[in-house]
Length: 628
Image (cartoon, rainbow, N blue to C red):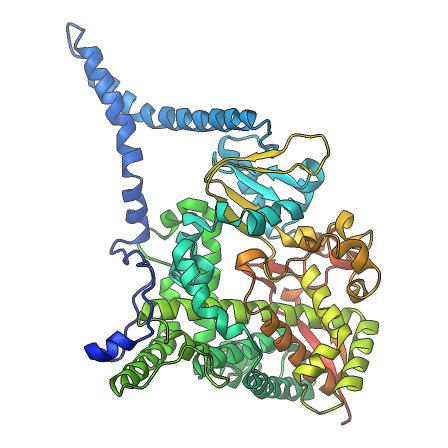
């Protein structure tokens, strides 16, 4: 793998045979060993048969032809044959695959989804246009437009390879639930995410995925009071920083604040030790000209920010790989561009994983029983170490959960406050519920959060319109069919080993699924009769946490964390005002602002996505602190 093995601070002594015989440790499936070659040469090495085979065939045919001639053909003819052998072989392969797909579709009385129009071979013009539009259009606006022209299922063929796209709930249900075993994450996605996520639960298939899922599931099976202790401590720290900045008369980047809050909460929840990112100074808007402006803009990275910045940079470098599909190693030819960002991540996590393994070994040496039951006061790492001694597996899994637990909740809290700033009536009603149920200062309990129905509806509406993972994918293992939603029409045929993209963002905004007001922010749709009209008959139209066997284990944890922070926020602040003008770089360009696909017809933040959704250059707000 491209991800290095966990380096423990000192070697572990093996337990005695008697203790080893009693250990509950499970052996995970053996992952592929870390490659020694850089990404580019390794990629070319894998392509070597495809590179050598065509000119070898051409050489053999020329030699056979030459045997019947009186003299050997000129050298230039051999060279020309070698050069032409690659495009001819590639063309023949592409044509054969297309013919086979059509034949298999016809055998099933199905059709291959319509291909998006393009002018240049390999859809190069589409790729160029996507890159150009990416900087000036609404998030995945090209996909919105394609659905208007080609329907909700189509073939976005790129570089001569099929890419089936859908936002049909029935097709997504097929991939995630009813035909789950016929789809996987696939080797392409694994390779792109491997440096950052290794073989963790979100980047593995088959037995390795089952192993991670089995380890992790018990930890999320019940609520713990220790979670609320963690939330409360870091929420107070975060809101104190907000209040301090607002007292200077300067807007605050709420996205930055909640990203730190969720990072500190997640690392303490995972490791029992947080990275203390909230200790670092928070940014000033670009229009600020106060006494701290120069220091804030030009200072070096604060020690508390090293882990956060390294993790974020690694995440963004990983997302870039997706643009280049399977050829991404050619753009990181001599070095892994994700790995070069992760030194601070390794420095933080490696000693903690090593210490957890040493403590386990010590308990085994004194013949202390290791119980698999989850204690209320243990961290996820303390739970996982009961199942395996493999430091690499432990590190991969915790980084996977860190990504899921930090980025997705930060996204939800970011766009929740954006929605409150845009809808004063929603803010007033939500705050009234908080004060009625919890009061102006008391810490919320699990019972309080369960009682706040409007809070749950509000968070659901945020997740509907701003899902943390707007675009996802699976890979078909064998030829499959998707039911055509149009009665009497042939089903769609999906060839084997094809990347299948699906977007819950598009599905969540479809008016035929959610009603004519689908693009309006209205939490009441999760409370009133629209629930029975739209959601109850077709629950797969709402999938912020995925579905099926891979459904998010931390779903309730995320609801609790987001609800807790919003309660504390609304206990302390009574009014929220959007101030993107304080940091003009955060304002969307005109093409994004007035997009017909924007919520309520006007986009005042620049919604973007790497692996998860975020507001580009931050969400700048002013808040009014309550007199209490």
